[in-house]
Amino acid sequence: MIDVTTDADLEFTKTAIDTEGAEVSAAVAGESVRYRIEVADLGDSDAVGPITVVDRLPKGVSFTALAGTSTDAWTAVVDDADPQTVTFTLLSGDAGIVSGGSAPAIVFDVLVDPTVVHGATLTNTATVSSGTPDSNSDNDTDTAAVTVDREVDLAITKTHDADAVRIGDLLPFTLEVRNSGPSEATGLGVLRGRQRGRCHGRGDHRRAP
Image 1 (cartoon, rainbow, N blue to C red):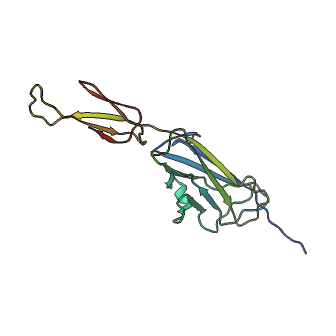
Image 2 (cartoon, rainbow, N blue to C red):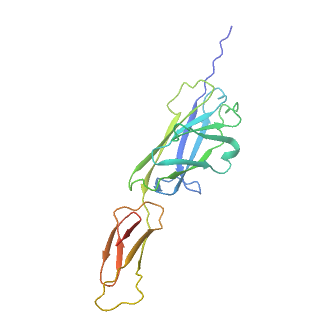
């Protein structure tokens, strides 16, 4: 009698990338980040399905969608009870990876919340598994980290409702500050002079008297 054992060795790589596929290390609060996940079988045995990748998104990041041709090869399911957990499964559920082969890459987008603070590091961790034993678990998990920048675009409008002004009358003005940037602005300050109002700093949408 010969006892046959199987042993796959899944190698897992996760990278933050731009839309051209180049690796990046920065993200902007309020904008999307793209990730690429690559899975290969370095073991002597085929990795039988299901091939699943469980991705744990950091706080302040939400899953958007699979990108490009990834929709043809993978499914993506967000955990209703824990939206930070996304499970990718290779189509079909019984599909595997042959020894020495690799699966189609998973490319997907996430949205960074506009309120994530400037300079924060978002570390995304994911782990792959298959239906075949894997004696080397050291390369089954990988992380990708990005540092968050905030980008704001503040503008101020000064208006008044008076149709006619007489010398000595009080004239009320309304200063309206808008942020057209992708990130939340904080710490807004308005400098008012005799002729004009200026805004500076990073601030929330706010109307000043």
